[in-house]
Length: 254
Image (cartoon, rainbow, N blue to C red; front, side, top):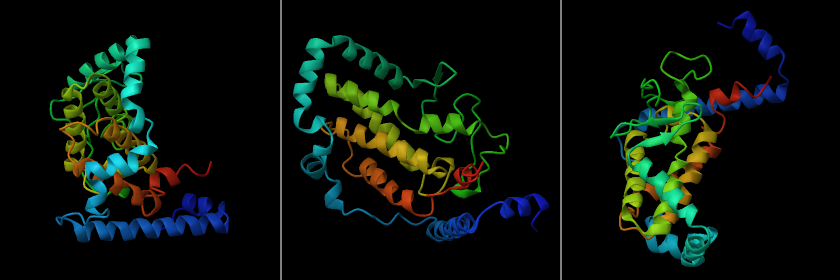
């Protein structure tokens, strides 16, 4: 039953906004049905397998990243002229390998040996696993601070691991990056969990993964399928049902 406050809110909208929000709501419900129907089933590949091989990424996609053709020259230039960049990247990467990450306003936090990507890294509270649209991130439910969960799940620290691998060739950094991406994939099936709630967060994470994948493309630890497939699999969600999640739509009108 519509409350007076909800009716006033709807009355303040023009027809275009009402139609837009209505379409978004329908897409959310359709995505929920799809999620329920595919539960327990393997994900249907959206990208042809040949486009996810190391060879394809190296010769057909890597030219979009400045490290593709001049990676060795860049490393030589940095080591010769900016050695402090190398030492800083290595020092940061070593701390990341020990699961110590800087977190806005909280200094450095220590993550568990097996990272729970749904956990608030400060309080330790874990967000329940359910359909992405069922969370109330604005009102809160005592589970933890969603911003902190999102911040860790942006995976921007993986780029530091990639840089350290590029500068040094130390497989330890590539192995840690692959381990974190693979662990994230295992814990976050498509459309399930807080980490699928925001299209902005999905896009930032996808960008982090793409840079990381190409920084460690030469590593023996890079699985030719899992991280890159999940990264590309995230792309369609940006333009479909997760395009305007509830937490975003709630703030589009002030």
